[in-house]
Length: 397
Image (cartoon, rainbow, N blue to C red):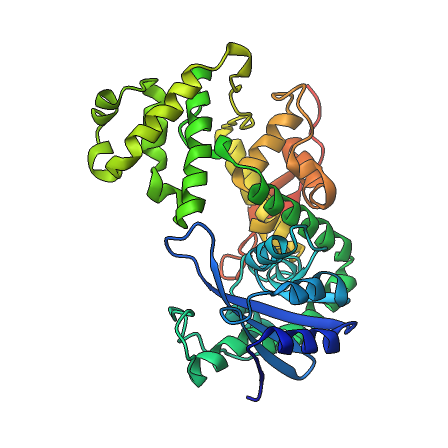
């Protein structure tokens, strides 16, 4: 297939000016993320109408004209699995772009599995198959072969057609607002995770003292600075399990740090003085500067009731042509049930009782909890053998 190969800032500026104001622009990225603090962007593929382009991100150092274009210069920017594209744009502009149209997310709102690969969506909606033979390509290598370029371009050449199909389907089902609400929420969450260090999300913190949590926070921040400075994954500097173990010990002496099992062979010796320094700093904090235990929400276990509600809500989602994994996790359903049963009094409404999810889940869970809906084998030979059936109101005792 024919394409434009953009290798310089001058060429990029020319094409961005020409694409300014178009209705739809589809794009995708190729990057290398292994053992890096942040992914290295290598290639941007673009489709505008029938025109295809490749932007060589290793040669074009200033990509901001393109990020400005996709953020504010076109009506709709179309992507598949938008997280990395959003983050590249956020880092380039140092501000968040408006919501992209993510065909992976939109497909989940019209009954396609979520998260679905691009190949699955192309096959389901267009009846075509795409070649994924170059999945493990090192996109830093130059020159790129024609086979690599053709592989990369197929990731964008069908996006506008898929957008048109999904946009129409969302409108027909009255779910366009649901889509934009969810995409906005996701992009806000990605921005928060990018701009604020998420030490509270680490595993193994639930039983730590406030002083140990202060050590976790101190070491996490130091580790992030070191990882960024050396362009390494943070866990290559100090693995999570060792970081938490150091925090549990509350010991800053280097000989005692060496006694921690695994530290002597999983950590570069030169980091020990820095770790010791960070632990001492946390141990010296006054009480009023210590962190509180992170709020992880209730760990609700509802046994058979939780299983019943999870199965029931999955059936509701299938009936409404919604991907169940897009609507709720098992924990989401348990929290909603516990909230409805008064087990979480005083807490805010759970996720399934907010926004578009309330329309999908709220009343159905209420009906199931109140015994007005039952699971029943409808047709054991069908694709969906189990269904929900209404029950008459039970007489009160």
